[in-house]
Amino acid sequence: MTETIKIIAAYLQEFNKKEGLNLRIFLKGSYIHWSKKLIERVPNDLDFGFLNGPLIWRQKFITFLLAEKFAVPIRVDENLKILKINNINVEFILLETIPEEFLEKTEWENIWKTSVESAFFKKILMMTYVLDDVYPHNSHQKMTSIIADLVMFWNKFRNKNLLEYSLHKKEFLVSSWNSFFIYLYYNYDRMLEIHFDVKKLDKYLTNVLPDLKDFIYGFFDYIKNTKSIYDLAMFFDKIQKNIAKINKSLTDFLNFPSLTGFEEPFIKKILIGKITKSTKGGTFSLNNPKKNTLFIAHTDEVGGIVINGEVFNQGSPYWESGIFEVFDKNGEKTGQIFCQKMDNLIFSDEKQRKINRPNLLCDKINHKEIYQILPKNKLKVAKFVIWARNHDNKISNLVLKTLVDFISDANIVLTTKEEIQLQGTKDKELIQEVENYKFLINLDVSEDENWDVEGVKIRVADPFMAYNSDIYEKVKNLFDENGLEFRPFFGSGSTDITNFQNQNSITLSIPASKIHSNNSKILLKNFFYLLWICKEINDKFH
Image 1 (cartoon, rainbow, N blue to C red):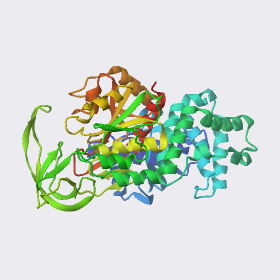
Image 2: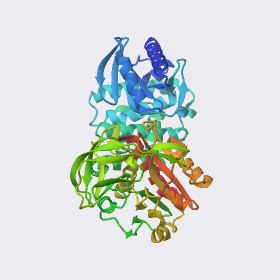
Image 3: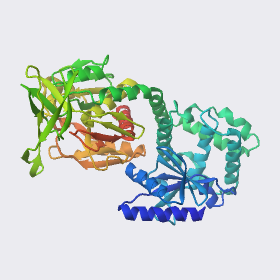
Image 4: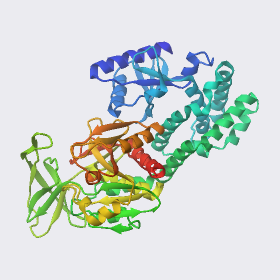
């Protein structure tokens, strides 16, 4: 076992040096107890997860290992990579990430490990999987092995005060996220932990020491009776039961056209049956008058408006030459044409340099009608990444749609004309309604070269908005309580919140590979992280 870890450590070091990266992995599973002589059974394999970092790093590392003759693939899907290295099966789980604060260093560079206490709890939780119908192997044989390991650990581990459930609550929350994403990947329709019938354990625990038996049953009681853990699990359960509908919304609406001035058809479609108030600047779905928080997201996207057969920019699109789709005022596609990008260098006061704001020269277009014109793009909602034309700001709209459809009684407003100098939030009637709320949470998308790093971004300030320490600390503390990683950042432009910065307002962003673009990618995980934190804000901000 140790020799195999040395080999992996050497190749990880070589990979990082070659690529100029800092990929880190962590050991977990039975090896943790075996290496401390807390169990005698030699583990069947080595299990690794990843510390947070770009998804592409993990994928490149597996490719790097597979390119070497010593690594033989046994089973490979997007998430689970089982390689035979030095005659030992080594499992890498790409969806499993744990922050550094919950791990311990090892003697090998860039390799960390879970604590022995954490490994013990994970082995207990593993029984919910082994005793479920989804388990593909011999459950009785596996349970016999698990119980034997738990008994031996219990007899040898002296400092049982370190196993106090509450000491590990935040780590349980983080582990729940890993379970959720793995269950989602393999199409499980429920969270196994909260649907687990503990009576299934009775026949396996008959001859187990009474104090260990009580500890195991007590742990499952703790999981179900601790509000923060149970609420998170129920959130996951709702997502799993409605994932087909959520995916359909993403597929139907991420590329639905909503150029500035053409937003109404999009808004009516995504808020069907939930609109409570409309103004010239936005549309409200107000679902609980007792809540003090209002969530805001603009619905317009940058693109081209066709007038007299000529294309004019609305907002600041970064065009590329290619095939473009033409839509009427109702969002119906009328055709597609080829357009050529025409460079247009202008001086930007914000960036203090010249930037390119290209225009389009297109094939012949009907001169009689007003059209929207947007880049043709193939939409793909996958298990790791979502590809769309321009996630700014459709993905935020769909976070809020999912929030009010399946998760929470939130109050939201979808604004218009944000891309044209924030015109929507200057509407007097909209302003009057917005001023009724104590907290304003704006959702948007920010361009980030590290878009595939897990975590929501918090816009601390930008050239048009000052830092608000009270609301920032309040939001930051909520992330910390949930064990969720986030990234504070300085924004590059204005948002709807610019017009409301004298209230308790802040912007939360999903990182994307590009905005105002022909092609944009986001991490699916970050969609659900933002959805969860919105639910928490709605529940806890008073």
